[in-house]
Image: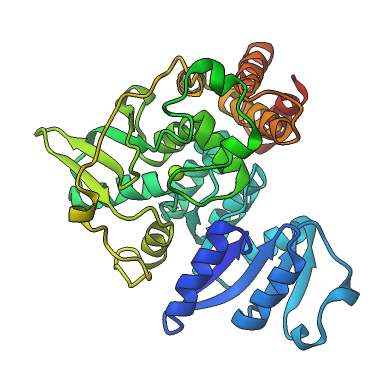
Length: 375
Ligand code: MG
């Protein structure tokens, strides 16, 4: 029996992780749950999974806690995140909150010697050097939950300790893959929110349409697998069946295939090195018939080049990339800027905030704050 704390339990990843817990009550005991603001959903989860602690980072009035949930300790704000990451008993901490708050959560969990299952991108994007250093010292390697990184991790396990020559990071290409530049420029939020294969939160869906998500994933892969950006290739694969692949020295390529269902990578991180039933069926290759692969169009999707330039620049460039993008996506979703403006805002922020340091978490917060202000 393993204990698990889930930071971000009401989001897309959190609810699917709880689905795995529900299928395997003999394997997992949930000890802490935190959410941002989804009070009712959190109460429902507490009722079902009976954790010792639960928290809302936006905070709530203690009088709102239903009387049948008094067995659980409720906390608010950063205190809730810290307690769930580092104080409550947990063998594993699933960090599935969205945003830079994930960085502190991951660092707290690693400092407390916990195994981190990482679904938050920002922790590695903004503080990859700090986080991987802590993980090394704790002797607890990060277990990726992002589907592409889980795929690479699985291929490396199958590779039996041989070093990868190259990583092939697959991308669906998003809803605008076949659109021309002018049409993409004027795309609406409703169009950008229509992802062809994956059902995810709004921010990540917009990032898929702009390929900023893939830029963030190049950064994640750089830290998770200690690979320089020139050895991480993006491969557009519209069917989202090959979740990524690894090229080895002998010319062999190992790939991981599966339905686009996050319960597979979540389940693998939770049960590693074993494999458990997740409720997902293997893809029917006969029904699929063919799988296709293309080079990404870096003219139409400038995020990829920008991400690589940030990794080469070092310092807080990746933090600026992330913060400026997050602010721009929020502005786009409020209908304040056209879709094409997202990448231009990020580019301007990178020019204006060139050379900021990222030596500690405070540097990163400062770079993030400034990146959000530039537009
Ligand atoms: Mg992904």
